[in-house]
Length: 112
Image (spheres, rainbow, N blue to C red):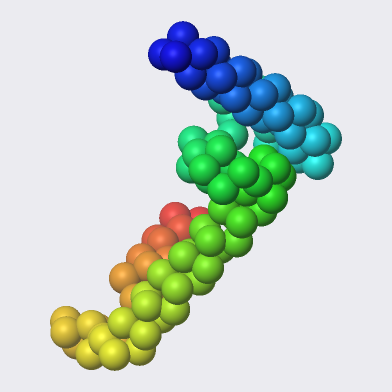
């Protein structure tokens, strides 16, 4: 009984590996510069494809969408924090870069 279960489990694992290999070829054809080798596929994508029985391409597109939403949310939080910021507390009207550029321009003019 245990041998039979092990054989079934091995057979299922082989089917999954073959499916992932076939799916990788499709993923590679859609994103040839991004996925040259199977190891280039994020582990979260592979885990999702196996766990949810999804094609790798679908799992990757879902992953990409999640990451884009996460990045957009992070940018929104940063923009909100910047809007709430009191600004510089040093009393400087111009950014240090602007003052440095003005100094460099004056210095270069004086050298001529």
